[in-house]
Image (cartoon, rainbow, N blue to C red):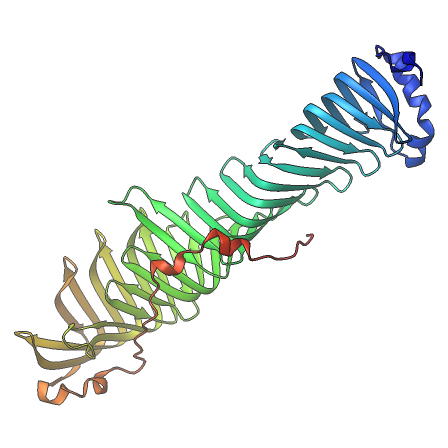
Length: 437
């Protein structure tokens, strides 16, 4: 090749036409023509038997609806490849990708970015170390320190795959989803989001954390489950299923399924729910926990309601008990104010005198109400159909289990804060294959 062929040439419209003519056979064979709209200079050469053009300065390239600009590009004619360097911008309809350097493959219609990329559409901004965007299937894949931000939430992950046509995305590895409106963060190993259905799912040991900075000293809600799903319809709802554990200040719970209505300040517990409040354990067929300004306000239990608590630390086998078809616990200023049991209500209460056992009172009725002051029992009232019996201490000592009501079961598996921790190294070892929607 002569020196003249290496000399930089000013590219104008006439030269662009000549370029297209020289490679028309290749582009037409592929059926996907790439148009060079502008470059300040062009140098043609042959590298390893392949014709290569170096484009320098204000480079603009067009392929159908894809517009590309950069400071400098190397065009490999036969392979249909562009190496893009400096201020790379790839525009496809409403999606724009920015990167310091990248590549564009003509036949695959694929744009790749490296060394820190940024993708923007009308509602979302994504950043990552590297990624690619396939134009025809409209699929984007991003890797390393991926961060996605929209108007209400932020997602971080090791990798993200996004299907634009269905607005479906998959995030894998060290995933966190933060919602600024509710101050809720959910982390896990895999996150799927279906934008068209307003549905999301977190799997691989998901953990929910909600901080309440308004509470004195701060109050944090922790939820652990096997699967967490979010639905956004008329009401925003988060559903946790399978081995659900909940912990918040003096409240703890386990169940098979829990529904959180963030706007309504309520938590519904289903499938063998158990709730602990301080030293009281409550069970039933179903439970609803109602909050007021994120503070516990009421717990309602329906079906086989049962409440139990150790009556005295000196007598670990003695339990005060309440049972009935439904039970309600009311709270004020984060302290238990009242317990009400209705429909076949039964109470077992241990009496003490000078730290010594003083027998057991067993009473039944249609309704039982227990009032508390500063969290301590003040009085017990019984209504309608009352029956009762008193058993003196000599009948109770060493026979405590005989005074346990039907359905009594004291569970030693109360959730602890340690159960809600999972190191990043443990989570990154969990993997699941990628799937298409």
